[in-house]
Image (cartoon, rainbow, N blue to C red):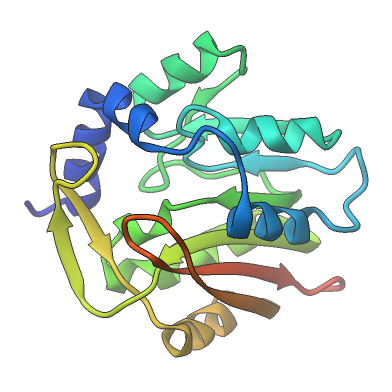
Amino acid sequence: MDDVNGATLDSYEQHVAEYVGGTPGAVSGEVRDWIGAALEGLAPTARLVEIGSGFGRDAAYIQGKGYRIETTDAAESFVAELRRRGFAARRFDLRRDRLEPGQDLILANAVLHHFPRGQLGAILGQLAGALAPGGRLAFSLKRGTGEEWSSAKLGAPRFFCYWEPEQLAPLLAAAGFADWDIVEANTKRAHAAWLYLIARRAATP
């Protein structure tokens, strides 16, 4: 599979029900704390966008905090699911699409680890360029070493790239982020070890 992200996307397209059924329906624990930190201090009028919204769980939680957030997904099946749940979702594929500049928060929960290791730096640079001065990128990765294909949860293959904290700092700096926080969490999820990151663009050019 030359395009590992495309092959993973095909699995998501065909297995929305399995994904929804295997994913907690409420935001809690480490994810809740991470999202809270990402939102801290943002004005109610801030521009927020989520990449890989899935069935809208995180977006609904953020809306419940008084914010408006644009929902997107690369899988048409998930865009349809989001719209069925009342979101004005659109398709957005990081491989070819670009966000409008001036975003105050970009959220990508459990998305970027589906890209090969050599692609993450360029993606981080792309997302940094879409942030307003002082804007934030919040993203999560599975912690570990190496890369693998797994059919867990969906019953269809997905590609995963695992990361350690020390591998990320050079990429974040090269992408143009001024500072960042990395929280290492041992969760109750099937893959227990996760990294939750908030990277900030400088407040002034």
